[in-house]
Amino acid sequence: MKLLAGFIVILIIAVSFAAVYFQNLRGRANLTYPIRVACIGDSLTDISGYPTRLQDMLGTNYTVRNYGVTASTVLLNTIKPYIDQSTFQWAKDFQPDVVVVMLGSNDAHVTNYLSIGSFVADYEKLLSEIQGLASEPEIFLVKPPPIFDNNLNLSNANLVEGVIPRIEQIAKEEGFTTIDAYRPFVDYPQYFLDGVHPTPEGARILASQIYDAIIQASELY
Image (cartoon, rainbow, N blue to C red; front, side, top):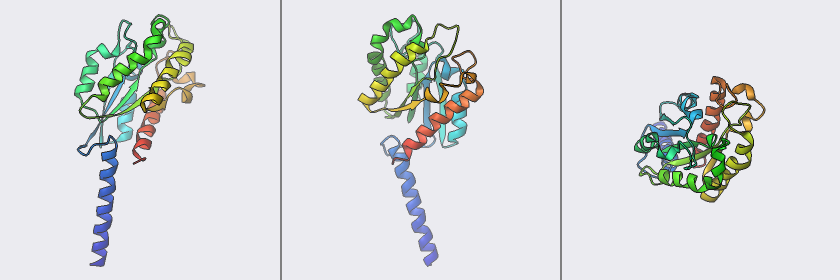
Protein backbone atom coordinates (compact mmCIF):
# COMPACT_ATOMS: atom_id res chain seq x y z
CA MET A 1 0.00 0.00 0.00
CA LYS A 2 2.84 2.40 0.84
CA LEU A 3 4.44 1.63 -2.52
CA LEU A 4 1.17 2.26 -4.35
CA ALA A 5 0.59 5.50 -2.43
CA GLY A 6 4.09 6.67 -3.27
CA PHE A 7 3.57 5.89 -6.93
CA ILE A 8 0.30 7.85 -6.96
CA VAL A 9 2.00 10.87 -5.38
CA ILE A 10 4.80 10.77 -7.95
CA LEU A 11 2.26 10.45 -10.75
CA ILE A 12 0.25 13.42 -9.47
CA ILE A 13 3.41 15.56 -9.21
CA ALA A 14 4.50 14.59 -12.74
CA VAL A 15 1.10 15.39 -14.21
CA SER A 16 1.01 18.70 -12.35
CA PHE A 17 4.42 19.74 -13.68
CA ALA A 18 3.39 18.79 -17.21
CA ALA A 19 0.21 20.82 -16.92
CA VAL A 20 2.08 23.88 -15.64
CA TYR A 21 4.72 23.50 -18.35
CA PHE A 22 2.30 23.53 -21.24
CA GLN A 23 -0.07 26.03 -19.66
CA ASN A 24 2.73 28.54 -19.29
CA LEU A 25 4.04 28.02 -22.80
CA ARG A 26 1.61 30.76 -23.73
CA GLY A 27 0.04 31.66 -20.43
CA ARG A 28 -3.42 30.13 -20.87
CA ALA A 29 -5.03 27.09 -19.33
CA ASN A 30 -6.89 25.62 -22.30
CA LEU A 31 -3.83 24.63 -24.35
CA THR A 32 -4.55 21.38 -26.18
CA TYR A 33 -2.44 18.81 -27.99
CA PRO A 34 -0.88 18.93 -30.45
CA ILE A 35 0.75 22.31 -29.82
CA ARG A 36 0.42 24.31 -33.05
CA VAL A 37 3.57 25.96 -34.43
CA ALA A 38 3.33 28.40 -37.35
CA CYS A 39 6.53 29.13 -39.28
CA ILE A 40 6.14 32.54 -40.93
CA GLY A 41 8.72 33.80 -43.37
CA ASP A 42 9.96 34.22 -46.92
CA SER A 43 11.61 31.66 -49.22
CA LEU A 44 14.06 30.70 -46.45
CA THR A 45 11.01 29.22 -44.78
CA ASP A 46 8.96 28.38 -47.85
CA ILE A 47 11.44 26.19 -49.71
CA SER A 48 14.26 25.38 -47.28
CA GLY A 49 12.54 22.46 -45.58
CA TYR A 50 13.40 23.67 -42.10
CA PRO A 51 9.78 23.46 -40.82
CA THR A 52 9.74 19.75 -41.73
CA ARG A 53 12.98 19.25 -39.82
CA LEU A 54 11.54 21.19 -36.89
CA GLN A 55 8.48 18.92 -36.88
CA ASP A 56 10.72 15.86 -36.68
CA MET A 57 12.65 17.38 -33.78
CA LEU A 58 9.62 18.49 -31.76
CA GLY A 59 7.73 15.24 -32.18
CA THR A 60 4.10 14.25 -32.15
CA ASN A 61 3.02 16.64 -29.39
CA TYR A 62 3.47 19.45 -31.93
CA THR A 63 2.04 20.28 -35.34
CA VAL A 64 4.39 22.47 -37.36
CA ARG A 65 3.10 24.21 -40.47
CA ASN A 66 5.00 26.11 -43.14
CA TYR A 67 3.58 29.55 -43.91
CA GLY A 68 6.52 30.87 -45.90
CA VAL A 69 5.95 33.14 -48.91
CA THR A 70 8.81 33.43 -51.38
CA ALA A 71 10.04 37.01 -52.00
CA SER A 72 7.90 38.47 -49.19
CA THR A 73 8.99 41.34 -46.99
CA VAL A 74 8.27 43.04 -43.70
CA LEU A 75 8.24 46.40 -45.45
CA LEU A 76 4.88 47.46 -46.82
CA ASN A 77 6.29 49.61 -49.63
CA THR A 78 7.41 46.63 -51.75
CA ILE A 79 5.96 44.33 -54.36
CA LYS A 80 5.16 41.56 -51.85
CA PRO A 81 4.55 42.56 -48.21
CA TYR A 82 4.00 39.43 -46.15
CA ILE A 83 1.13 41.01 -44.25
CA ASP A 84 -0.88 41.29 -47.49
CA GLN A 85 -0.48 37.65 -48.52
CA SER A 86 -3.31 35.13 -48.21
CA THR A 87 -0.80 32.79 -46.56
CA PHE A 88 -0.67 35.13 -43.58
CA GLN A 89 -4.41 34.82 -43.18
CA TRP A 90 -4.08 31.04 -43.30
CA ALA A 91 -1.42 31.26 -40.59
CA LYS A 92 -3.78 33.29 -38.41
CA ASP A 93 -6.67 30.91 -39.11
CA PHE A 94 -4.44 28.11 -37.81
CA GLN A 95 -4.65 29.78 -34.37
CA PRO A 96 -1.07 28.82 -33.49
CA ASP A 97 0.27 28.43 -29.98
CA VAL A 98 3.80 29.27 -31.15
CA VAL A 99 4.78 31.56 -34.03
CA VAL A 100 8.29 31.68 -35.47
CA VAL A 101 8.81 34.76 -37.66
CA MET A 102 11.85 34.78 -39.94
CA LEU A 103 11.53 37.76 -42.25
CA GLY A 104 13.97 40.46 -43.28
CA SER A 105 16.22 38.93 -45.94
CA ASN A 106 14.21 40.45 -48.79
CA ASP A 107 14.07 43.76 -46.95
CA ALA A 108 17.85 43.81 -47.48
CA HIS A 109 17.28 43.90 -51.24
CA VAL A 110 18.96 46.97 -52.69
CA THR A 111 15.63 48.41 -53.84
CA ASN A 112 13.46 47.42 -50.88
CA TYR A 113 16.07 48.75 -48.49
CA LEU A 114 15.29 52.30 -49.61
CA SER A 115 12.25 52.07 -47.30
CA ILE A 116 14.14 50.64 -44.31
CA GLY A 117 13.09 53.60 -42.17
CA SER A 118 9.60 52.08 -42.05
CA PHE A 119 10.80 48.62 -41.00
CA VAL A 120 10.05 48.92 -37.28
CA ALA A 121 6.55 50.31 -37.74
CA ASP A 122 5.72 47.78 -40.47
CA TYR A 123 7.05 44.84 -38.43
CA GLU A 124 5.12 45.99 -35.37
CA LYS A 125 1.96 46.10 -37.46
CA LEU A 126 2.53 42.49 -38.54
CA LEU A 127 3.27 41.36 -35.01
CA SER A 128 0.24 43.19 -33.66
CA GLU A 129 -2.01 41.05 -35.85
CA ILE A 130 -0.35 37.91 -34.48
CA GLN A 131 -0.62 39.14 -30.90
CA GLY A 132 -4.33 39.77 -31.45
CA LEU A 133 -5.09 36.13 -32.14
CA ALA A 134 -7.42 34.33 -29.74
CA SER A 135 -4.75 31.67 -29.24
CA GLU A 136 -2.39 34.27 -27.70
CA PRO A 137 0.71 32.70 -29.24
CA GLU A 138 4.26 32.76 -27.99
CA ILE A 139 6.20 34.70 -30.65
CA PHE A 140 9.84 34.18 -31.60
CA LEU A 141 11.66 36.64 -33.87
CA VAL A 142 14.47 35.12 -35.93
CA LYS A 143 17.45 37.19 -36.95
CA PRO A 144 17.95 35.93 -40.53
CA PRO A 145 21.01 34.00 -41.68
CA PRO A 146 23.88 35.81 -43.41
CA ILE A 147 23.63 36.72 -47.07
CA PHE A 148 26.64 35.58 -49.07
CA ASP A 149 27.55 36.31 -52.69
CA ASN A 150 24.39 36.05 -54.76
CA ASN A 151 22.66 37.11 -57.96
CA LEU A 152 19.48 38.25 -56.21
CA ASN A 153 20.55 41.80 -55.31
CA LEU A 154 20.37 40.95 -51.61
CA SER A 155 22.94 42.74 -49.45
CA ASN A 156 24.47 41.35 -46.29
CA ALA A 157 25.58 44.86 -45.33
CA ASN A 158 21.95 45.98 -45.45
CA LEU A 159 20.97 42.98 -43.36
CA VAL A 160 23.62 43.62 -40.71
CA GLU A 161 23.39 47.40 -40.57
CA GLY A 162 19.67 47.92 -41.03
CA VAL A 163 17.50 44.84 -40.70
CA ILE A 164 18.94 42.89 -37.77
CA PRO A 165 19.40 45.93 -35.46
CA ARG A 166 15.76 46.82 -36.01
CA ILE A 167 14.64 43.29 -35.20
CA GLU A 168 16.68 43.48 -32.00
CA GLN A 169 15.11 46.86 -31.21
CA ILE A 170 11.58 45.50 -31.59
CA ALA A 171 12.37 42.43 -29.51
CA LYS A 172 13.85 44.55 -26.72
CA GLU A 173 11.02 47.08 -26.67
CA GLU A 174 8.20 44.55 -26.96
CA GLY A 175 9.70 41.67 -24.97
CA PHE A 176 9.90 39.11 -27.76
CA THR A 177 12.40 36.25 -27.70
CA THR A 178 14.94 36.35 -30.53
CA ILE A 179 16.58 33.42 -32.26
CA ASP A 180 19.98 34.16 -33.76
CA ALA A 181 20.24 32.43 -37.14
CA TYR A 182 22.99 34.82 -38.25
CA ARG A 183 25.92 34.00 -35.99
CA PRO A 184 25.90 30.19 -36.41
CA PHE A 185 26.31 30.54 -40.19
CA VAL A 186 28.48 33.63 -40.53
CA ASP A 187 31.62 31.66 -41.44
CA TYR A 188 29.90 28.86 -43.35
CA PRO A 189 28.80 29.87 -46.87
CA GLN A 190 28.86 26.18 -47.82
CA TYR A 191 25.52 25.79 -46.05
CA PHE A 192 23.81 27.98 -48.66
CA LEU A 193 22.95 26.88 -52.18
CA ASP A 194 23.04 30.29 -53.85
CA GLY A 195 24.42 32.48 -51.10
CA VAL A 196 20.94 32.91 -49.61
CA HIS A 197 18.91 29.68 -49.38
CA PRO A 198 20.04 26.93 -46.99
CA THR A 199 21.20 23.54 -48.15
CA PRO A 200 19.51 20.51 -46.54
CA GLU A 201 22.21 20.54 -43.85
CA GLY A 202 21.79 24.28 -43.42
CA ALA A 203 18.05 23.75 -42.96
CA ARG A 204 18.76 21.13 -40.31
CA ILE A 205 21.03 23.51 -38.40
CA LEU A 206 18.46 26.29 -38.69
CA ALA A 207 15.72 23.99 -37.41
CA SER A 208 17.91 22.98 -34.47
CA GLN A 209 18.43 26.63 -33.50
CA ILE A 210 14.67 27.19 -33.49
CA TYR A 211 14.02 23.91 -31.68
CA ASP A 212 16.49 24.86 -28.94
CA ALA A 213 14.85 28.26 -28.46
CA ILE A 214 11.36 26.79 -28.16
CA ILE A 215 12.48 24.13 -25.69
CA GLN A 216 14.59 26.55 -23.64
CA ALA A 217 11.71 29.00 -23.40
CA SER A 218 9.38 26.26 -22.16
CA GLU A 219 11.92 25.20 -19.52
CA LEU A 220 11.67 28.60 -17.84
CA TYR A 221 8.28 27.62 -16.43
